[in-house]
Image (cartoon, rainbow, N blue to C red; front, side, top):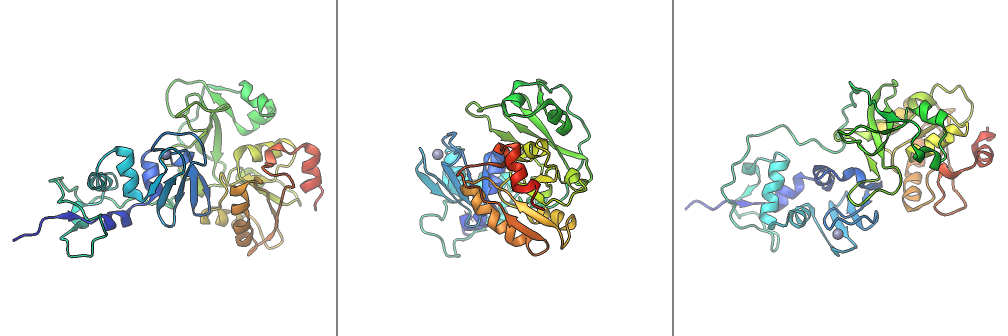
Length: 345
Ligand SMILES: [Zn+2]
């Protein structure tokens, strides 16, 4: 007698990551990365507290410390989010990530995990073997954009509120997008250039506190920010003996630049990818000095030591520690910048 097909949940789980699932829902960009941890608003109950939902990318587990008070693995996440059975969650995952059902069928002989071995799969049509699932660490370069965003309001009050001068707005190509179509509607856009100076993406920042359901920062789907170091194309042209300052955010870099410290780049997060490390390595030498100046918060503190260790293999690295908790480079005054790094070398 032929055995009934079972979906091997463990096998399905081993083939997908929480990052892919968050990407599938279009919410990965609302998460902050700290080492192997992602934290952000809970996509299941739809909260907006940025630390209520955590993902361990190594163990591939998640937890909502707020309303859901629940956690689990990738399939548990889809189960909750879609409000379906764990079995249907597995089937959905296979469809979304092009996993042929044939490959994850189990005849029940392999050791089942308690309570997890599924009921027979319904007659879902297996998809033909498809292109391999793209991994979050996909390291293909970002292609230069073939369009330029028009309809940018350079004098939106958000810039003045954030202490950004008109000159800086123009210098960085910033602007509030006034168009009525596309991803950036309602956002202030920040062009991101590759090392050759070509625009590879527009990042969006909601001007002020975003309403429910709108992320503070937005990046276009498919853009691999880990392949770029913000402002590196310009920082390397600064003929200066002063150290290269590495910050986390766009606005930290923009502000330091405005205060006259132009040898500054941003990692667009509190961790450094291998590609970013390589970009910095190729544009420094054994005599180069680098200052890692991250936000004086949990994420910044967690990220900076790892980065310093890695960079110190090929240049001189100093980690800047602020004496005020939660201090960010963006909030330094011109005098403080000069004291800290301006006259340092
Ligand atoms: Zn939740």
